[in-house]
Image 1 (cartoon, rainbow, N blue to C red):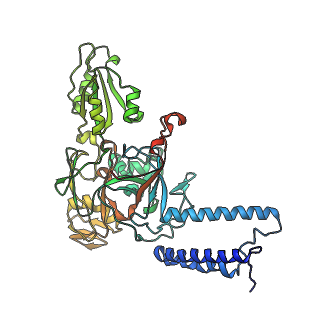
Image 2: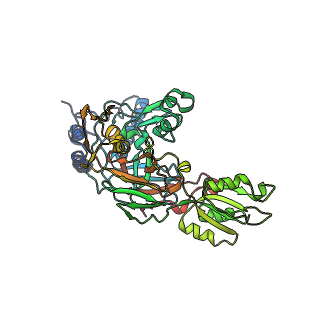
Image 3: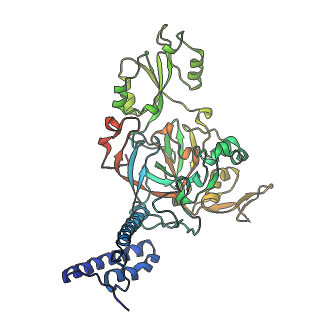
Length: 485
């Protein structure tokens, strides 16, 4: 069999190439043993590329036609980059952009960061046939094939999910998506509008699609509840197993802020880091002929607020609605024109549907639970309330059929059952921007097979509310490690 050695290499260069090849092949074998033995099928090709040279690897680069040589070199370079970056994104690090304000002021809209998949161990690919470097869509079309698909398997990582970790995960209720209205999630839409309306009204809700676990949208939240713990919120304070826990440093609540009519200056808002999109002026005395206004009074009463008029000619002055940390609240309280700051109080009406959306509870985002978080190997007794809390875990996440007969008998995979034992760990995630976060209080638990990784490094931060060269780039946030506090 003919060999195709690389011409023009000196003996020293040939030796260096073999040393480099030996190191690379050794690392590749270690990677294959960690990731999957299937990777070892490529080992003969690597050995031939560096040592035996039975394949003419430089056929395109040495072709007599200059156009073929140029195109061949370009194709080789593109393939090398795509394959290398795909491996890095799948097993080590992946780029991620912050899409919402749920973690303000910890992570901001417009932050671009790398997610460390080694923190908890990367998942082996579950839908491997896909357009490289695309997540679930490309040019408006699905970017992957549903088959073949593989069961969940997580490789060994550096640790496990701990309380207060910032975690990137696939959106659990993103298994079914109304493309015309992806937010709120499909199950909340069905509870609000009715399933038949969601499926029939394509003009409003769009096409209904299913997505496998690793192709569901990415979310980032803070892990508050761990497997086996009992999660509860009382008057906005989180309790775990009946004990209050410490709050994140940059945690925010929504407040109503009243001034004597003086407007909050842009300089002050910028200094506090309050975005334009987060600030709402809900009352300004200049907008009304008389000082007080029945509509505003009714609104404030409904919201549980008790502001007093600031003067006969100024009514309630000016009232703003905005999220604040405790530090920001203290700073604003010192302004002489600020008359009152009251935290928003959630009611069942203002809080909206909370998890479980198809089961009536008195819970709100401010007073929620207690709710037991499933743990792998934990067994629960099955009854109507338990099914309401855990039927998604049993059916959607762990893949069992679930049926309740008219006589109350519960069938799992066709067999009568009175108990169920969970096969996975689950987590409860919250946003630091507590009153502006669509989190586990609204869509439930995050299964372990949905965990992607941990935000590790922030490399770019853009403020879309400002011109690029006039505050649009947040220089102070860039090129730094991300901490959980």
